Length: 350
Image (cartoon, rainbow, N blue to C red):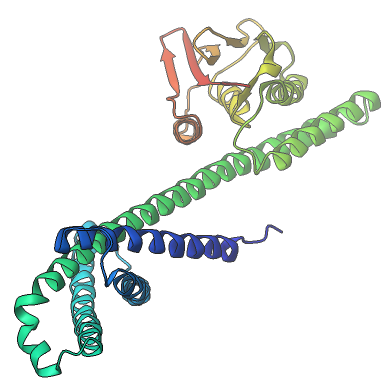
């Protein structure tokens, strides 16, 4: 069972945040002194630096509480909740910043012999500009950081949703193979087991190999092309025992071990060709798997549509197309005419 590494990730991110906070406060304090006093290092540099660290840590804690449960289901709801949450956050920032700024400035002034009444009289003209500038920069920085963090969270949610959707589609394809194919295979096995024990034994080995492959690759996004072709050959072997010379498979790919492909992708295309086309000894169904120079594998068959077609082919093809786009970033290509149907699926160089 796979163990979650979320606590470790959270610890790393927390440590990284504290380091960035210290560095950011150092840069901010130096910039603040340059803008308000005309020099980077000034008498109150260390006091301002420590004060900034305390504020950042305090604001981060408040922001975590405010934004932790920011759940939304639409863009409008997201905007509304963000605006309200940010306004509340800004209110806390201004109030806390004002209290800390006035308190530390008063203590600093009193330690240098300035009476408290004189300090408060001089506060608007001497300290207000610095407080407004500092709060404005803090709010702007906090807003940028918040939206950056929210963007990362959205990207992670999209990636997780995409991965879950891909896994669901893969499971759909796997389950689609399991019941129908197993039912037909067992019927074929029952007809040959008393006629040819050696053939029946080979049939069972191939059948177990197919399902072992499906189970082994349930967690894989890509598989070696040579392994996928072996899987297709085993699958087609079992089909050909039932349909004999009415179906043919022609594979023409050089050095398949040098490439990767989505697992169970070629099998799906071969299965759909068998399912949706008629085949006879006079007009056999011929399936060709070949490579091209554009980084694609072609699965082509002569078109001999059955009288009754189901919509499962299009569903399976759409699922495969989405899996291909998610994993490889490329599109699944289809070509067809009255005489042939061809699907091109991308491969990845090792």
